[in-house]
Length: 202
Image (tube, rainbow, N blue to C red):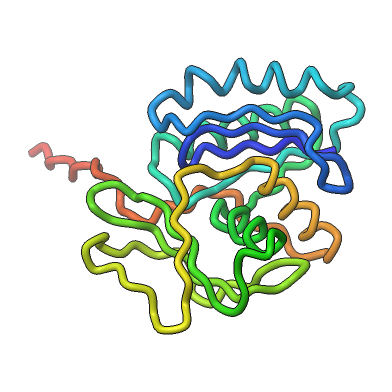
């Protein structure tokens, strides 16, 4: 059983069993209360399973804003470390892509789009396939006013990422023995704050 956490948009926490069924899930689309809700959500969701049933933790790594992503990834890292179980990283757009393919909503090429703020969107282009959609164009930023899907690409803009779908991606990757994804957050924009150059003291 996997505990999955995503804070790339709102906040979502879920438990999925080895067949991908949802055991428990809590979520909110609120993009400003990650730190306030992550603790209670974890407590409520984890209570639905015995401690020995958990075999891994899944962290959604974005793309997403800096503040939101670091809350979820830090929580996933801490929980995995505390329980002594593996941490698996999954790109958040992959969760949306798999849900769309499994639901029969897409075929061929399609794009997952999320709000990146500052009048920009984050876009990843996929090819519909199972057990996992394949990435055609990795996640990148586009000015919202300029965003027009290429011919033949169907765009799906979402405001929430399901942690349950995130867990299903991790299960599919584990079943296919794919390499682990780097758990570093997927920031598409340089940080606003940079370190200043120290002045030389004569």
